[in-house]
Image 1 (cartoon, helix red, strand yellow):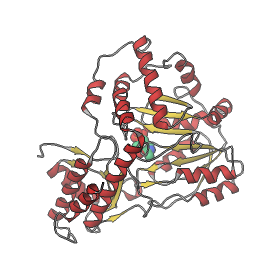
Image 2 (cartoon, helix red, strand yellow):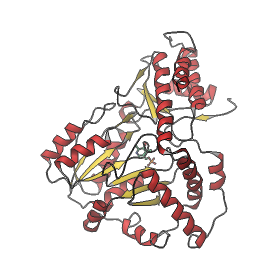
Image 3 (tube, protein in one colour):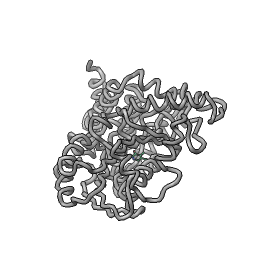
Length: 385
Ligand SMILES: *Cc1c(COP(=O)(O)O)cnc(C)c1O
């Protein structure tokens, strides 16, 4: 039995001790002045992280609840929607819109490939009535970071009024995502990714264009209604009991995030991703994502032909206490995913990579160079200034 465990999956991610302690604080009155002050601080911090001067709302829910909130608040049954199912999460976003009665046109993207802004623009030219475009910033199932800036720019050229809804759940803070700068209407975040807090909160930005759409939108909604939330937020409260433990944690985590600063956070994630790629390639493994479309938050690795992902993951977990993720959907056993987001540093990445390299060697997978060459490749990346 390993003495310790190291959680290296793309969510839930490790939580710093001060955040965990904050989550364990005694409850307070959610209608009292202490709560109101907390909420004011959280919303101000989230706006900085979302790079927006517009509204940001918090709902107690998994990230999927945030995707659902985005859809039901700005659309009506029968609305034409263009979705880009880049993987398991992109598919889910499209499915939610369909379940609520949108008429969804899918721009298919091969899993592992980057969505092409030109193709999406072409689809929008064929769909002049499209009300919304559903995008995934960082597709966690494939380890691909999509060019939201480029896609949004091309989309607006074709349809200036289209609502752009972006699943930013696993990409925010690990890669740039500019809500206002890129003119995005609803961006969705989720607490258990780079925010360093436990699962259970989703965050949504709401642009002026989204508010205008909201006033006409007729999809059914109650709990996730933006207007109810906005009305309560005018008095620094929420319409229903907020998830106080996660909010206490978010306060501490946001202070950490803002102290590090967004550019530094993005650089840290980019470096950990570059080190991970260098190491797995030096171990003779192939990256699943197309070159140039790599995620900063996680690295998807194609499992060697003779070793299902399950075998590698099981051996790492049981012998070394290192927990990595498998694939999802149709590529469940074909890939494994190495998480490097949130409260994770160079040392964690080196430990994960050393464990992977040792595991491959112990399983009898022929390494192209001597044991340690993979870790050395990562060390070389980390040694660069
Ligand atoms: C984690 C994640 C979600 C949401 O997952 P939940 O399990 O609902 O919290 C959605 N989209 C992406 C891209 C994710 O990484």
